[in-house]
Amino acid sequence: MAKQGKRLKAIYAGFDRDAVVPLVQAIGLAKANAKAKFDETIEISMNLGIDPRHADQMVRGVVGLPNGTGKTVRVGVFARGAKAEEALAAGADVVGADELAAAVQEGKIEFDRCIATPDMMGLVGRLGKILGPRGLMPNPRLGTVTMDVKGAVTAAKAGQVEFRAEKAGIVHAGIGKASFEEGQLLENARAFIEAIQRAKPTGAKGTYVKKVAVSSSMGPGVKVDVASLASA
Image 1 (spheres, rainbow, N blue to C red):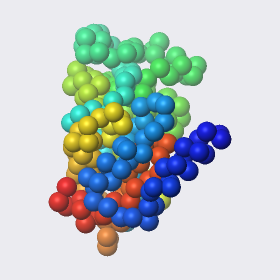
Image 2: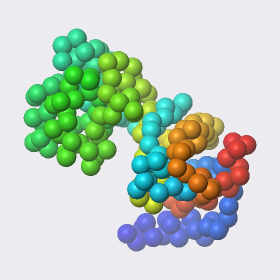
Image 3: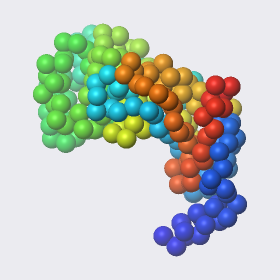
Image 4: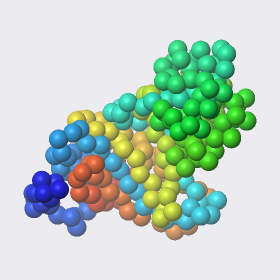
């Protein structure tokens, strides 16, 4: 803990925590402040003017980041027969039906994204109490309940991320690694921001995007000038 304290103290010494800067500059600062011994994730957080407790104000969806996330995503697929073979050929890490459901019930969840064909939802539905709290429950609106198994697996592996507003109206996601070029991180940030803008719910009133910040896993948050998002 002492080492971490010295590291953060050194970062804060040359960092104005009250400064509000354009998106491109915020990304540069977050990248520069990623000084841990591992390749930190660069994250973006957006505080929205919504109340997710109301159904008409929920913000949820998926977005494909043009430069990927830099993470290895393990994909699990509930499918049988030809669709199971299609999933394996597309690069899915775990594929199955009853045996996969049994493994999940035993707590063996060896995937980060879960996809299912429509005919499997009767089986998968019984796993809702396990998969739901982990954000792994397949959903047709997110493209994870589909007959296009190949497309869904490919998208998940290529850097597709899910987002969902938390109780306080905040959505966040990793948009790449500190080792990415600034231009790559900016492109990913733009894609995420555009997806959030498109997902604006009908019940949202007043200012939609209230605050935005960019940070690395272990670094301080950099406040983003919301007005700069339009030009970005």
